[in-house]
Image 1 (tube, one colour):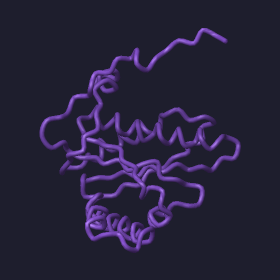
Image 2 (cartoon, rainbow, N blue to C red):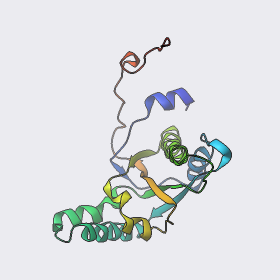
Image 3 (cartoon, rainbow, N blue to C red):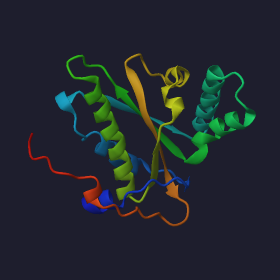
Image 4 (spheres, rainbow, N blue to C red):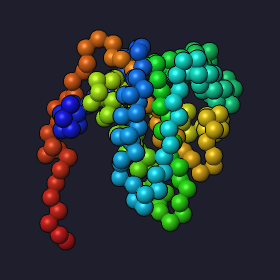
Length: 186
């Protein structure tokens, strides 16, 4: 797929099933992520892959985090948390490594966000369904600790990857004039 076709046609696909991306496809996903803008060549990101029964353990971690936050969480809320990682055969947790005092933290976070976006675009270009989700649990210390993050790391998002169920969706056509303006000086 040509680059502009991929960029213009990408849409989040939330109905995913087996099979997950192959090892060769995953290599292409991560190579795309490793080539994003990165001020100072810090490479302020890393990735954790979760698949198979590890997805169920992640669901248990999500439920545990919810219970720590709200001991009165309903069984329905806990069930949704446990089932969330089962939405796709492969999850990639994108983690920002905020390890350089010489670069602003926001630049490191944005670079990690670009890495997540590159994975989603590379998935689309290969015909793999993908959706980037974050949600409140990404910011819970129990989840961060359970995934092995250190104090200088943050979860940027959970990327769900798999085979699209049914027809691929088409993106809405937006008018660039609604988002672009010119600045002519003070």
